[in-house]
Image 1 (cartoon, rainbow over the protein chains, first blue to last red):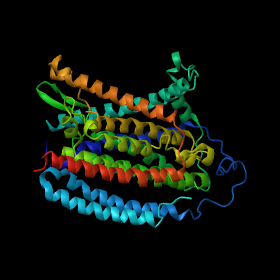
Image 2 (cartoon, each protein chain N blue to C red):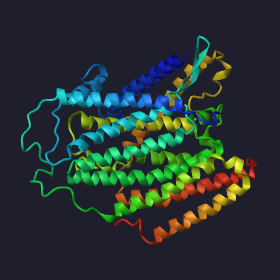
Image 3 (tube, rainbow over the protein chains, first blue to last red):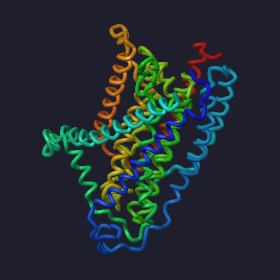
Image 4 (tube, rainbow over the protein chains, first blue to last red):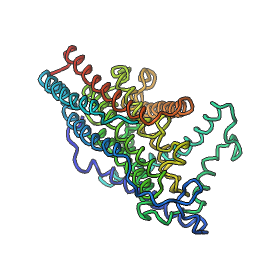
Length: 123
Length: 344
C-alpha cells in the first residue's frame, strides 16, 4: 500500500501521453502524405444515400438526448461522492454505512421521481 | 538512479504500447476468423498462410486511401475527433499492472507504467474523454447520419458509465483502495473478486460492452439505420483510427475486467511448483494475457451471437435495470460486510 502518491508517480502517464500523441500525429501526417489526391466536387459532398444533400446537419435534435446528458451530470456527481466513502468504508464503520443508506435513499427518491416523470421514456 | 528509473519506464511504456497495437491488429483478424467460424465460412485466407498477414494488408490499404474531408465539415474538429479517440484508447493502459515485477541486478522493477493510488479514477477519467472523440467526429462531419450516430453513442456511453461507476463502488468497499495494483495483489490465491461480487461483475461486463460500442450495443454504427453511424464521412487512416480504437478499447477493457475481477496476474497454485520470483512473475503475466484473450474472444462470441438492441431497450436496460441493480449490490455488499464484522 502506498497511501499517498507524489507528483513524480504521474510522470509515466505524461510519457505515455507523449508516446501516444506522437504516434497519432505521425500516423495522421503519414496518411495525409501517402494517399492519392484526386478530389472532385462530388467527392467532397456529404453522403446522403446518393441523393443531393438537403441543407446541413446543424439541425435541432431530440430534447431527450439533452435530458439524458443533464441526468448524467447529476448522477455522475453523486457516484463520484461515493468513491471516497467506498475507500474508507471499513474505517467509517456502522455510522458510515447508515449515513450512506440515507444518501442512497435520497438518491433513489430522485431516481424514482425522474422515472415517474417520464424523463427516460423513449418512444 | 533517477534517469535509469525513467529509462525503464520508457521501455515499459513503449513495449506495452507496441503490444497493445499488435493485439488490436490481430484482434481484427481474430474477429473475422471467428465470425467466419460462427457462420461456417473460411474467413480471410489470401494474405499469407491462413491469412495471417491480413491485418498488415488492411493497415497498408488504410494508409494508401484518399483522405476525404467534406467541404461543409469543420476541418480541424474533423481531424481532431479520431485523433482524440485513438489517444484516449492508448492512454488507459498506463495504470494496468501487467505483472508483479522483475528483479534485475538487485533492483526491483514493477511491470506497470504508473502505479498511482487513484488508478481506477484515472481509467474512468480517460474513458469519459473517449466520448468526446466520437461526439466531435460525428458533429464535425456535418452529416445527418453522423450526427445521429454521435448523439446515440454519447448518450449510450454516459448512461452506462453511471452503472459502471456504481458497480465498481461495491468492489472498492471490499478492497478499500483505488490502486489497481493493490486490488490485483489482494486477490492472491483463489480470492478472485468475481466470487465475492458476481452481480457487480455482471453489471461491469455489460457496461464494458456498451462503453466499447460493441454488439449488442453497437447502435452508434447501426448499419441498417445510420449507414456508418458517426464515421460515415471518414476515410483513410482516420476511419482506421475509429475502428482501431474500438479494438484497443476492447483489449484494455478485457485487461481491466481480468485485473479487477479475475485476479489479474495471480495464478493459483503455481507458487508450489515455481519458486524463482522472476519466473513466477513472467508466468503470471502470461496467465494475465490468457485471461485477456479469453475476454476478447468473449466479446467476439457475443457479437456474432446476439442481435442488436433497440434504442429504447438500450436506455431502459441502462437506467431502469443496471443502475437500480448496482445500487442494490452496494447495499448488499455493505450489509454482508457489516454482518461479517468487517467494519472497524
